[in-house]
Length: 347
Image (cartoon, rainbow, N blue to C red; front, side, top):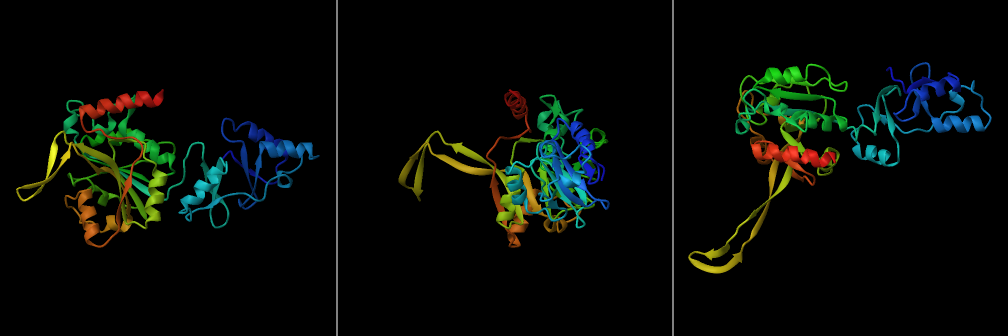
């Protein structure tokens, strides 16, 4: 793996300092490897200064100076997101991901990434956006700009900030524009566009994803504007051993009249202007891969169908409350709200 943060254990300290000098503004941390590429230690700018003060020379090999007791996670065994959170809270900025031979296969930068979630993601982007016409007559809804940036790109960026690297986008209406939008990799990640042959509901097109790399899949509408905490969403899913978790937003209905409590025709009481509180489907789901693989093929199928079928089969389907902001950009009013919200966030 080529990375400017990786150096060999035998190079002299002066050479390591020159490498460190090129790292800014990134964290000034180097990962030290042996002849086989096995990670054996870490070296920081502070380590180097302390070594020189203690009598080491600029020609001393970094092997004599490096920290041999370092934090890391194992590739393919990074399902313990709690451990990642704990490491991040200890102040670690760069965290190596090692394979079974202790070779570095990835490096998590906590200044850029919140965590490393072991999930795939599928964004549904095939809708026609009828309620947003005429804006969507020539532009697919996911590509409409919010604060100068396409709606879908906010969601892609959030997923990638949480370490999700296997991302698919299902397309249909004006699909060529979305395919062109993701023709090039985004920050090193190739977004895979999947054309559904016909409209198959809010989740039916996931059947055309050719391969899932993880046992949990995040499926979401591509036209949402939200700051949902994906790490907490995932930890909640795991904590409750769920088969499916549905992100939900609070929804209240205020009745401006006195409401009778009836028994037949007899009034037993009056509730004056009651408020009824509910949770509404936010269009974001964490789903065990096997549920998606067992969906009916080539059939119009909504996420609500999957929920009902899972419940009927005795699966654990839970609700995760979103505590931040959430907008479903399905109307001109919501689109305007999203653009106003972006202005507020940027201040």
